[in-house]
View 1 (tube, rainbow, N blue to C red):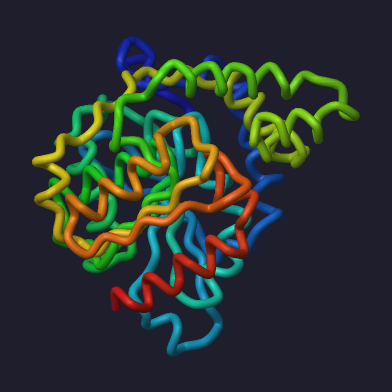
View 2 (cartoon, helix red, strand yellow):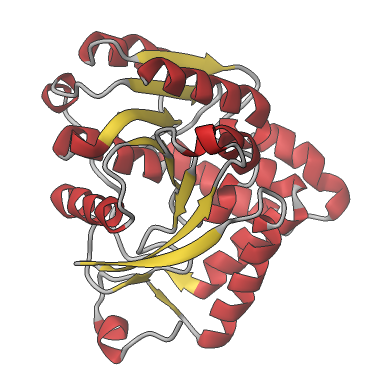
Amino acid sequence: MPETAAVRTQADVGRYVSDVLRDRYFAACDAVYALGAAALGEEDVETSFGTTHVYRYGPTDPAARRRTPIVLVHGAGSCSAMWYPNTPALSAERPVYAIDTPGDPGRSVQRAPLHQPEHAAQWLDETLAGLGLDRVHLVGSSYGGWLALNQAHRRPGRLASVTLLDPGGLEKVGLRFFVWIFASLFATFAPKALRPRLAAWLEQPVLVVPELRTMIRLGVRAYRIRRPAPLPLSETELSGIRTPLSLVLGKRSLLVHPQRQVERVPRLIPGARAEIIAHTGHGPQIDHAEEVNRRMLSFMDSAD
């Protein structure tokens, strides 16, 4: 998907460094998509901020196809392929749409910055409208969790519920998280025999899934992300959220302080659920997929 010269010259718009690396990255993504459910189709949605690429999954049961759909929003530096452990179980019960966020490596094309909270909410609302979705269960991981939380605060009209998986947006991102990110990246270059031990030590499942490891490494090489870390929502902003909300945190998360947030979020957001998954860090939906899938579907059933 070639970029225009105008896109390349904007300092605050993400871009691929070359067509060759972009195509290699797409091939690596396809290998990860193949680990999950087979997509029923793909489509591009035009928005004020660029073209959003979306993968569509769905159940075979006609009754399940009529249920409120799920929309998945991935974390920073990744694409919707990261949902491969979740698409089979989720799409067996409901229609599922997995979005490539503009500004991150993936098949979307960013043409204008959307890191400002109101712009991010406008982009996601335009994307849902373009898909013809009036009511969705929105699921976000990490940076995608900030996008989902921001949507619940600013434009909740299309949201049946929000599920946040170790999300941004609850507290300022600390140095320990960035140290973990860089340590995890360097660990991808470790000898194969050492990777399981490093994966356990770093709580980093990427290291032991060869297809995922290749995709992440190529994404870092191929794409230049151009956005600041999002600021957390204030307590006043959180307390105004009325969308049914579920917060799922890894016990050893380095993005947030889990115990603090499972006590704080239900206090601020009426009716919010908050729970901690043991023996995991920042990726509970990957290394505890079966349990997290079950919890997400149960929450969505109750919200419906």
